Image (cartoon, rainbow, N blue to C red):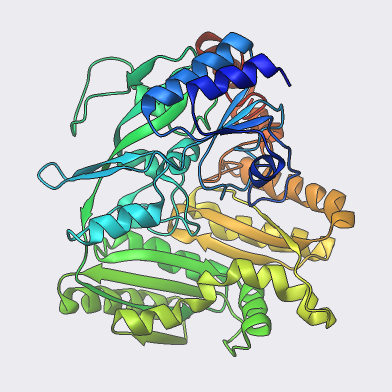
Length: 458
């Protein structure tokens, strides 16, 4: 490592470290991919410090990898080429603008920190990933989560961003207004770019009124197809208070029973949440949903009329990742925890049932447990696969088949987790050579030195 580069970094950012503890703490994310140590870690407190760090790395031709909470699953915030990890966690200022229904948020603010500040004023940020990422991380991957049905993904909830470009310039992507039609949409360029075109340092995001009431249910079905048909019909019925609609397959429920010592029926199950200001409106939507479900073969359900009861019903859905991690150890009597690979394919909603059926068949052939959690109304589902290192080759072969099936059905290799290093080989399969060539040309034009998170996406 160049001593002059490190000295220059320390002049650019007072909080610059190169000790083993700091480097190891940023050497991997929450995914199943291998880790890699950076050469230095900078934790800037201002946008100007970020710009100075970027200019320093550009001058020394050293890579920069922006990192938030480290909750990613595809290695997108891991410095596989060394260089500097730019830790955004100190960029966490939050300003709430009630009059314009938006909030100005530092890229390092956690989703939970933003929502805690908003809740005091009666508001919330709509997108709701299951993890607790930073706002910059959510924007960089296009994260979404459980509330997409009502509020959309992060991409639809960002009005404007402040970005530091690869040459250290500070730009605003667009005016902080609801509508703007003045040239190329730079928001769309940087959202989902995973830090390969610049560093997102601040966001102006939409906020929504916090609903006063919550209720919900779990609804059981004979098949995934019956659950899918129900959700399609319910979506068409415009049930305006339906916030969340999640599917767990029968094996996912079985894993939950083993790990958490519950006794839920092992059948495909929908988890629902309704929100609103009037109990009657929510329960009317629930009754409409239930009628549709019964017409598609649902024979049992549990209803929760308030938030406290609802949280208990949802415990199984929230515990699916931990369940996959512990399942095989408990079955073998060792109580060992395993690594968990999390898939993220997304298909047209009308193809979801067929894609899940094909996926379950491939899992059965490969003899892996098939834990599936789906944002079913979006066509996005996650396969949670516990594995040990000697099974990695079989796991990757299974991933090829699952993603290949999804793309053949008109789908995507990733609905919300991003590309990182884990999904790179599927990009041409999904988009075609000409499309990917345009992405490469954009990267070369904006980052000719290839210092911004090199080796990711393309």
